[in-house]
Length: 368
Ligand SMILES: [Zn+2]
Image (cartoon, rainbow, N blue to C red; front, side, top):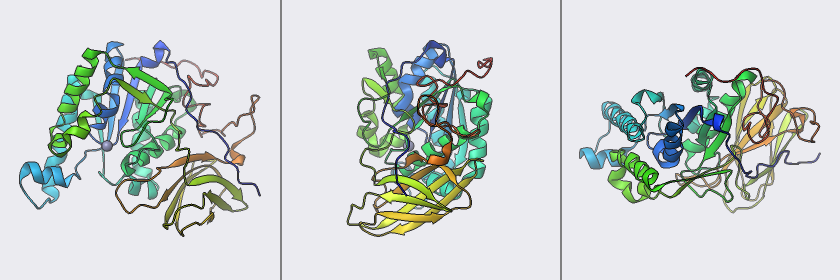
């Protein structure tokens, strides 16, 4: 049995066609990520006359140290968290107004802050349903979402949840350019897309970031370090080159995960798999130092998996999630690449449509 990665997720250059800017949707794990990562993208969208939606996964309510500092209280109870969440939602709307966008652009899904990995590992059904509806009803021409490689667990989990939600969309609703952004950690060069800022654009981005006063209290320097001259975006499945998960394969009714066998620390291995019917299967196990593979019994062959090896006991991840496709994902296409079965979006064939467009499914543009 050969263990072989199926599809390269190396960054690819992306040139946006004008109609990619018609209906822009940004997914932000927390209020402030829209300003830190996509203020220029949103600014350009407004300049193009785009219809814009920003979907906030959480309200950013679990943020105790800035809240203690600003509210001069030690105990953060449920009422205090609700108050903080409302404050952060207001900051997000104000930041959008700074970019010339009306507050109604914001949609809050109210998932638990610092809990998106937990949501994902529980199967994420309710949240996935809401996210899928948000995508399907908006009918975007461009989606920017967190990268799987972001070191913040909420961000990388949000990236996986968006990938899963996209695969649930009917084919006619999947015609959009998909971009990924990194807030925590470096964006590898070359990015798929670079958006340079004008001096006026940089001033608007800085103003949008400054709307997030709750986050400036303890992290002003870090927050303003994102007001840079270029926003960079990746193709959505881009993993770290030295990711500890090397490859996956099905062996009868088991998924085999190949690890790099490096590292002196044990940890946990998490798998979120998807069957050809779109069913989400979640598994996890403890991994020992230098362990080279792990096996998981699964109820049906998986066509795609997201895998993360968690070794650090610190808050931030070492490597984030890696997306891998399995040999049974479908039959080879004419150009030698793999075609996903119906209902499952494969990288570079369906989602990032401007990179490798699929046959255009009927009319696409929705009315504004
Ligand atoms: Zn965030």
